[in-house]
Image 1 (cartoon, rainbow, N blue to C red):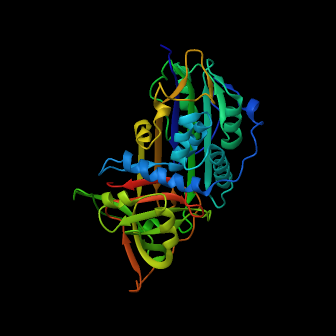
Image 2: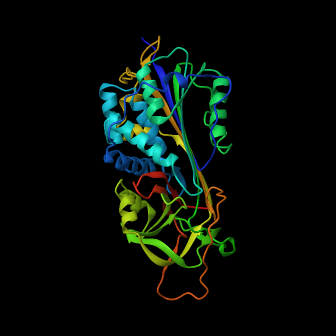
Length: 409
């Protein structure tokens, strides 16, 4: 019986920082910087599919009553890159899950990466991809050139089934994330592993209108089980905000000072569980479209959240089945290994976010906040003191970079 060789995906999105090449490995990137065809026009369906994928993964990964955080963008980019190595039924499953054929996925990825590399204001954004190849893998050059051309991936070669390779990957991720995610690989890759695909997303934003720290006050947050916990709440002191009441929820869109990205806070009219069942790829764009400027008295928890887990089974439930099946996976467009065909062994995902008075993470830019002295009666009051959903979203394309639930401090 032939042995099957493993591919592993490590997705490490966070509101984090930095990028540098790891030490102790061979950098092959320059060999494949050219040669890929020019990208065709991007398919809008691919943007919508990122939102749909995020909604489905959030529902599947979430443990009711616990905070959950994912990066739909990071997952979609890593899967799109992997799709370039798939063929036949395996490729068809990637394309069905991601909402477009692989050529359109590549174009869409290149378009998104170009957009986010050119953000203004004080936003710092870096989306880093890397492929770690074992010497036993004879990789298809077209696959590698597409990964570098469309996704900006760095290519490294190392003996993957060694602790040195594990440390090199973790060091690379640690540098990208400035130490906030110091370890994505807890164990040395299995001896059969011939390729690791690693994605890390760094995003640091400042609010267009920051919150005054003097207005931050403690308050009670009530979880779904009725238990209460005290936490700090940011307050805007009553000012004009982009407010919506639609899709069975109320909330605000808090723009960042780059003018392109924003933080969406969504408080369901009823229970969070029921509202999440209605969440799909059209929900966030609909909420953005419904938002109008109104005077709002807002209280938003000041919080940090992180989540990590294995997405393999969740993705299989969403239709990506053969990629994980040693007997059925077809990655013949990716390359060959001496002991047998390839399949994906795991999809590891980690994410982290911090929301404070200045923005998401520890943004250095400051924007003067406005305080209301005497509150008039013609305003909305939005107090997020029970479980809610939130997202860091592209205000133009509706793509969720991060999507999560805050259910207890």
